[in-house]
Amino acid sequence: MAEEKIPELDARSDTIVELNARRRAALAEVDNASFSWFHVKILVVTGIGFFTDSYDIFAINIAATMIGYVYGKGQQLSTNQDLGVKVATPAGTIFGQLIFGWLADYVGRKRMYGVELMIIIIGTFGQALAGEAHAVNIIATIVLWRFVMGVGIGGDYPLSTVIPSEFASVKSRGALITAVGAAQGWGAFTGALVGLIITAAYKDSLLRDNPDNLVTPDAMWRLLIGLGCVPGAVALYFRLTIPETPRFTMDIERNVMQAADDVEHFLKNGTFVVDPDAIVQRVAAPRASRRDFRRYFSRWKNMKILIGTCWSWFAIDISFYGLGLNTAIILDAIGFGSPSPDLTGTAAVYENLRNICIGNLILTVAGQIPGAYVCVFTIDRWGRKPIQAMGFAVLAVLFVIMGFAYDRLTASPAGTRFFVFLYCMCNFFSNFGPNSTVSVTPGEAFPTRYRATAHGISAASGKVGAVISQVGFARLKDIGGEDHFVKHILEIFAFFMLSGVLSTMLIPETMGRSLEDMSNEDQEEFIKGMAHVKYQGEGAQNHSGS
Image (tube, rainbow, N blue to C red):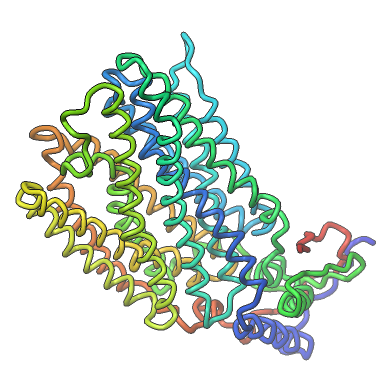
């Protein structure tokens, strides 16, 4: 049946009043719903994405050392090579966050969810199979594949935040989003654990290697990186069957009746049912466009939130990735876990790889994981804004101590252990603080039609900080001697943490508020009229899922 155009109705008519009331009632049902197994499914499916992202990003800490033993000059990667393999993923992530954030708002969360995971799997698999030939440099090949993987990882950020945000109730929304993000800690932990297991499994083979021509680490790093495909492959089916969020159906597809039915079904049994013979009644409501985007964000009350979320994410990623992707360098610089001077040859290689893995495990377990879960259990009680401001302030103090007391602390074994304790505290308050909260507010504070786009812009700002931090760390750390400038880098981190306190003041407190309330738009008469009707089977998006 062809589309039947009907005149737009007066906003004061009974039909429009009824549709607005039904929209508000459906949203209220979602906002007040009890936590259910459906929410657990959303948590697991989206959390696996962050787990995979973190594994793939931080496993390079260990893999870069292994790659250096085989392909590096003097058995280590040059500064540029090390920088390239570490910065390629954050660089690709910037593109993925911007592109997938926009696509999630344009074509739908469901349609894009799973596509980014396919890109991650392909990029990870490509790295593991990278080879070298007369016209092919393996480091350049790895950098290329890590960039591709980064695009997929970037796409995961807005999607895996906006989807749980739009399904969660007001009371548990912050905890659900931060619990998804907490999977990052487990990804980093698993990467270090897998690295330790691989190192132990290849010990005998490694010790039999020719010290001047190591070959065993070539198999080790490929296995370490390649295993990153496994959780992504497991999660792919569930990603593809996640249902469309009712808020997208309601406010972007403008199909209020279908969205209201969807809410009723998923609250009862966690599934969506789409009747192919149903009539689609599209409503006249605010629609995404360049003109509307400029109109919305030209208002200071909206623009200041975007500025606040962008700079806060930029500031925390300066320190989080500056430390997280250079753990081995910092541990070696302070002499923590370095191989015994008595060890030489392949024995020293084995001991170095083992210590790097153990060091990463300690830092993750002692700081990142517990910090994330303290945030999960407090964010809907204390609030996003105070946790973020507190985290930035504490991190500023910690970096000041670590930077200005660096020489004194690292001059003795006791001081070195205290430095490691402070390092763990940085990980703890990053995650019980801005590293967790910066992804929450942009997934809540903007209208549905721009929620994923604004989240992608905010997240991309963070990864710009990660790239700057990595390049700066690599270029600055050896000024005045090997690793001599590390202490000053920590002092620079303190400045950015202070700036994060200020940017936090620009964002609103979103705890206990509905997503619609935070959009700064009139919700009483959100629907202005009727656009057109057509049968569901004629081109309507199929957003059913198990």
